[in-house]
Amino acid sequence: MAAVRVLIVEDSSTVRELLRAVIGADARFEVVGTATNGVEAVQMTKALKPDVIAMDIQMPLMDGFEASREIMIDVPTPIVIVSSHYDVRQVAVSMQALSVGALAVHAKPLGPGDPNFASQTRDFLRTLSTMSQVPVIRHARKRDPIPQQSRIRPASGKCRAVAITISTGGPAALREMFQTLPVDHSVPVLVVQHISHGFVEGLATWLNAFSAVHVKVAVQGERLKPRTVYLAPDNRHLGVTADGEQVHLADDPPIKGFRPSGTYLFTSVAKAFGASVVGVIMTGMGDDGVAGLKALRAAGGPIIAQDEESSVVFGMPARAIEAGLADVVLPLTAIVAQLTKQIANGGA
Image 1 (tube, rainbow, N blue to C red):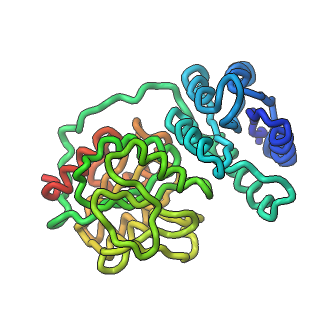
Image 2 (image 1 turned 90 degrees about the horizontal axis):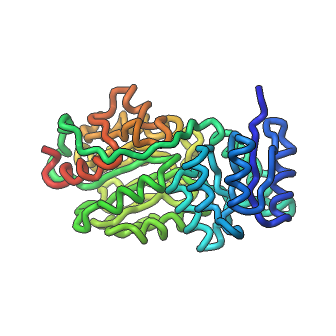
């Protein structure tokens, strides 16, 4: 099997050499070049055609956001943002880069002296390998209206909550959703977004800058409120109490490798709300959430899946559709309108 060809983009010579050593030590990878700024990154991507790019954020001449945008316009290539989650500005720009086509964000390895270096390295290389396989394309997203056949089973009685599971491509999709979510949105929204450790607080801050509703990281025991989006925190399952009134965070084992897991969320809200919750499964790899949607379907809750064209990776929604669990398949731009209909009167 051919080695994954990696372009490293990093202006710090120390970090650049660390990344080169980490990647080069694994026979599955080949470092095909290193760039010290965004301008070089664009030029070298065109010349070298790497399988994946490890992209820094703060660089001279052109930062990682601008470089990612130019690359996705000129020569679409999987990009993993390598950022410091301790730097507020880097987190914000990292999220911007995800919004223009970068696939994932990962914390910079802190070096061999750090006690977590081995696990950080494994996670980083796994991310590079996984993202190198994503078929990125260059095209403008179409702003589709709601399809005529978008009537689905209503939430039974008063809709009490919305539950969303999302992964690769999620930050940009969530930003677009929450930008258009009505300010009088009357139910809480619970979200499992797969993202690298350390970045969920920054994601909440970034999303808040664009959202009419309040976006926050969920806290154990807090009461669920309308006009509020609750993001699953690092390494905790997100759910609700049996009465559906409070957030419940759990340290239960990962489900198919995920904690937080969409399956845990959907199962939890199905038990608490029954048919009075809407489930949404969106862009991402694999099938996290699908098993939980079976519980939600059994409880009578309506289910929305994102369509292929508007998904960065048509994995999780595709598995839900194949399993016959989706009541309707919608483009990203139509999901909020459908949710609004569901919340208004049960989706007529």
